[in-house]
Length: 234
Image 1 (cartoon, rainbow, N blue to C red):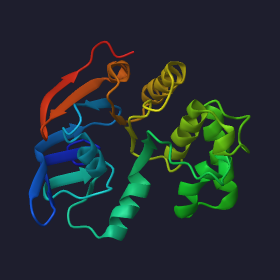
Image 2: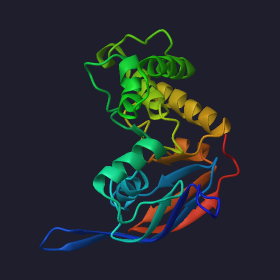
Image 3: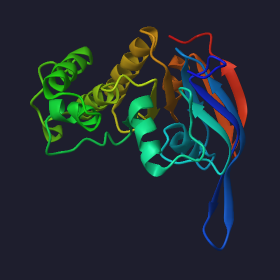
């Protein structure tokens, strides 16, 4: 945690993409603090800078200028290997397209981050089983992604994201590829995770999912245009 009690601190973050012919300023001075236990929905139209912001939040990329600290780690100026280490320890990812490895079972997919994290095999298997049970897939441990529905695959992805007990769970359009019923189920899982004390940041176009969050941040043209508490969060 940072000295000011935040899990995430962004101070005047800029991101410029230089194609060689033209420079594109995707983020134009982002200030964003996120505290432990918050459920933040980041919303905005296509091209607003949401994806760039997600990449920075998740340590998939580094800012051009500004200060970014996550869990007390300063991301500025770190090497690619150090960035990967911070990412593995601090951030759990849930993607719209699930990003599961098709040749691995649900259990093996959840074990994967722990394998890279150096967790012993028995401990990996036990934790992966517990996490899949937690998301309602205790009977599907040995099923491969092709044997699961979209909603079930996203549950596996959530369990995998929790494997290393990260400071922050970061989800990019997590209901985007799901039918209404499955999407509602996934929203309920996120709500339960938040109520249990997890810190969640979700990038979404889905107004129903955004309304579940305790805080809604809107971004347009690379700037935050609105940041407010959501008193009706379910």
